[in-house]
Length: 385
Image (cartoon, rainbow, N blue to C red; front, top):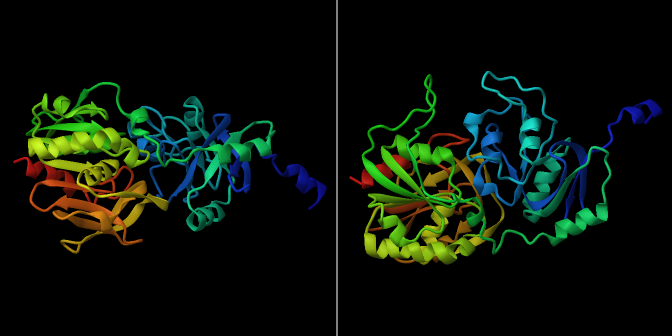
């Protein structure tokens, strides 16, 4: 390498340190500082804003395998919650100037304003292979415009991260108090419109609910009241619901289950109401019915995951985001497996054989992702009469 080439090479301003000592240097953008988390990868080609604001990513840094991240900017309509929840972002190429008619801000400025660190110029293929082979690592991500890093301290911070097992993160991302939701799915040309003629009263338990999931409930004819993750059976029944929805969310389902499972069991034993769960809500329902959950090697994160409906034979392309899964071998009598992943055969859905109580692991609201599974919201609505 010539002196001129050396001079042109940019000084790294960000460093990603894995707990095993592996280092990735790149260019930082977004906020400055340091953060520790579990590292995962997401294979979606679109929807980086929805992914970063998905509460299910609490405690995780997301590696995007698709290189064109940031090219459409960001806008207020696409947030799945008020602020980014994912701890940080790893991308192949630095974001370019956004080009999209809906763009209101560039990605870097949006991340900086919300205190989220990002690193670009990383060999994401190498990083993704490492995650697949060795499991989701604990990492430390640092961004310093001057490129000064204490590598020993970074690696030590990564090694000191406690991991997601045993963590109840739902309590950190749930709503502080109950609220009503009547906004429906975005549709051209009016955007978001309100549900004015709901047919069913639904209580949604917020373990980290995405806005588009609530919109799908409203679009299916539901008058939605959202309650915090800590809601009790009496809190729910005070609203006289026709059905109960258990939302997506982050963390270890066994930890959240310490208070959620007794409530769900009361609901199943006393109320005889239709129940629909998604993601963490699926895992909560499974635990309440007597099944077990397990930590996956690297989880499922993407908008292109094939899932088979074992009862109809239909294959759906779905949006996924989970690092824990229901152990299908632990499903008790009276609980049937309804969906399985065609990637690894892991459980993606269950239902009670004699009641309208069911749940799925994937995110059927398609934000981001395909809309193959929206029928599940309609099935839930139909079960309420």
